[in-house]
Length: 73
Image (cartoon, rainbow, N blue to C red; front, side, top):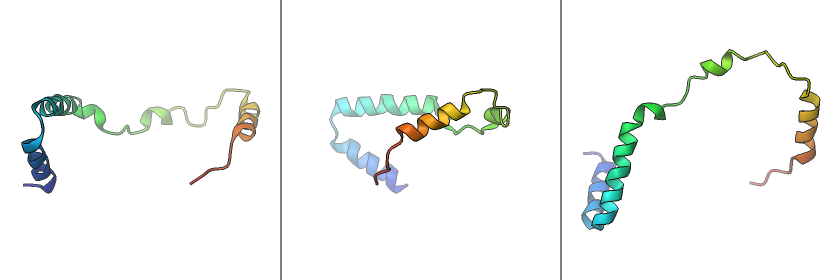
């Protein structure tokens, strides 16, 4: 048995019934929606590559320069 599964089972042993119920509902939801959790391939956006149609590029770029701030890490 995996360590994650073992830890989950140990935690369930001491958890209140209400927390277990909510966890079960959440897990079932995750499992139902599992196919939609995979990342997209990017193919749909590639069809638009190289097709800039706007005439506001310079204005948008200037807006970025005007509103950017120094990154803080």
